[in-house]
Length: 409
Image 1 (tube, helix red, strand yellow):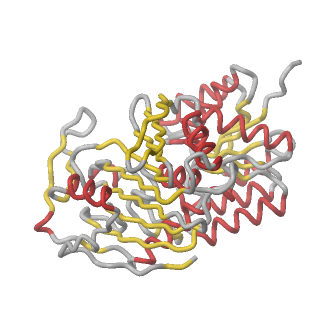
Image 2 (cartoon, one colour):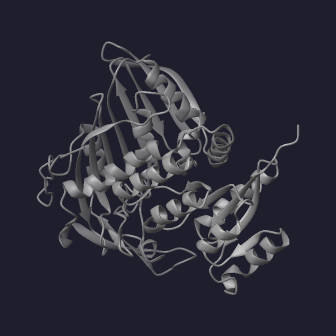
């Protein structure tokens, strides 16, 4: 039986939009999708010359604005992909849904819970799919972890924790108009490690902690601490603690103010076992049983994220055709938005760190030989210690740390 490809339009052609165009192009080879239209605000710009020529050769329709695409693609496009900056997620998603299109919006769902809920309301009202681009949860290894968690084979989830120590240079924050901002273009976006670089890990932790196979954890309270070493508006170093409806406590530690990358690690602690997720190539997942106080390795999985974006798209296509909700729906994604927003509320903004604990390190690369990175001295061993003990910066008693307040959901 011949497939009917899903017609997909993308708002944008540069940055991450180009990545989505690449994924859709791959899906075309299996007749799963067809790239129907793309928004390029100024096709005459030299940077868009090659992609514009290629798209025209492929008979892909090109529009200058999203509004023009929504009007011109009626009855021609099924799914609109929105890989635009965070501040535009809610507005573009709602307009696309109301125009009659299904939507895949990049992560995070939005900058605020209010915007995310407006997106959900539009999806419910129109009956159109609204999926968010959290593709990590589609990996075979994460799915096996989720099954183990909800099956009860290790008993009740007690706690989970995530750490991500990911250096970011000065040029990272000057690459666009919203990087490192709390507010951008009249919208709160809370761009920070928890919102962006480690957002997938936070979402995955919430997803695995959910009670049911297709649900993320329900948050009952949030506590957070946000610190800034770099010359930005938002935070570059964060601690987040989430209490869930099942009693499990989730911790996340993240910083960009380090000079070396330490691959992200996640651990889930149950009454009778634990699970580990260690980033790398490949990702290594370990499932442990428990004998007394000793953990016994039961299974090791080598996981990959090479196909997860394709699986995300195929899940959305299935949901569209079968009139069902996709796995990475707005209902399973707004919790990450809520947690980040309340994390900043908990700390009452961002604490500026004293200059005597920081240093500026030159960074040489082929792309930018004059780049630098602002780091917090000894931040890597400090955060690894906090991760191991489940403590926040203020609970450690650091002179520069400030205690936040618990925000109830």
